[in-house]
Each structure stands twice: as C-alpha cells, then as structure tokens.
Image (cartoon, rainbow, N blue to C red; front, top):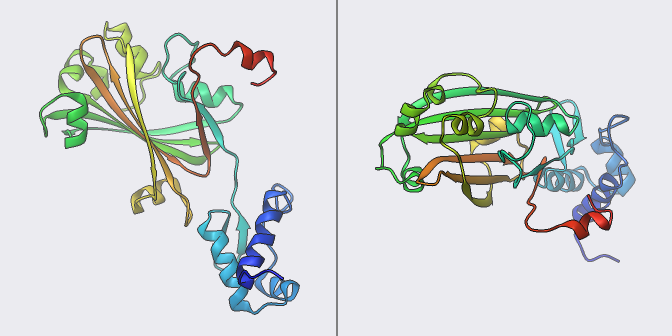
Length: 259
C-alpha cells in the first residue's frame, strides 16, 4: 500500500492519465466533477480538492467557477535560438513571423514604442550612462491566438539617431536586425543569458499564465563590430515553449534521421 497521502495518489493517477492523453482536446479537456472523482477514488471532497489543487499548481489543469477543471492546452512552440535573427537564413518579414509561419502556425503581435531612461542593468549591457535616453520597443506576441511571449528591446539613443525608424510606432516589417544592417549597422555577434523564475503579476496577466507555471527569460545583447547596439529581454510562458541551439558540425545528427 502506498505511503503517500491519498490526495497525492489521486493526483498521480490523474497526472498519468493526462500525460497519456485521456483528456486530450479536441474531444474532451474537462475532468470529471469533484463528486465523480470522490466516488471513483473513495475519497472526501476535501481530499479531491487537494489533489486537484496540486495539479493546478503544476500548471496541468485550470479551474473556472461553474465550469470545473480543464486540462491546460499544451502545444509548445519550439524556437531555434541560434537561427533567430540570423541574416544568413531566408526570412519573410521579421524572425518571429517567419519562424511561427514556417511551423504552420499563426503569428500575431502588438507593439508599443517608448523613449525612456535606460534601466541600470540595461545601461551596463549597452555601455551607456545609467538613466541615459533609450528607445524601448515592446512586443506582445501570440501563437495561434494564445499569448506566447513578451519582448522588450532597448536601443541606445545614438542608434535611434542613426536609424530613426526604431523610434517610430508600429512594426518594422523586415525586422530591426535587417533594417539596421541595411543602414550599415550589422549585428556581428550576441551574448545570451537564460534564466527561469515565477512570473510577476503583470507577466501572469499578459501571458495568461496559470498558477504554478514559471516563465523563461531570454536576454540577448547584440553587438556591432564596434559596440553594443541593443539588449532584448524575451519572457516566455514556461508551459508553451522550448528553445534549442545549433552549434558546430551536425551532419551526423541528420544522417541518423534526427531532425
């Protein structure tokens, strides 16, 4: 007999069923009611609720008043971070639109542009004085109409003077990296920093994140041959995203049939 508390045993059974697709869309996503689960597991309603609350905290299910519990949609988008913004790869529009469209999915994004003092950590990466003027381009991005990420890119004021479209509202259709390259300011390298944490209230609201789901933070500082030209912070939903990098000769990987 298991020594685990009964609510954990209940959660383990439901978790396994979810992973095996027992409640997979489009046929069904809703779990049985609390009373049905209480009967099935010969457990009290409080025990059932504790088990379900554990699955909510793990981001596997969500609860809505009057609608019960539903399995969270898990259709992760995989981003190749080494190809993202790489000018050597063919692109139709910016990198985000290209990657999402090529995956057979639907991209959508909204923009906000501000001129504001550079935060201290951003100023350090851009090698400018703290609180000096910077252009912030903020994107709220969706995949298949589901919130996917937010992206905040800071450009130093000197760069906005040389590339004025950076400070204009709205999309730069070809992508900012290609726009800058066309003006003789080519990104020749970047430094990535990746971390995870729980979302802030604003992040949870913008990304519609359920309880227990972390965010993945990807900070990329881009460099021309002379100095830093931008710092981008992308905040991803932890349950709907995967990242990969391609480094070095991978011919053996293809020969083995691995994509």
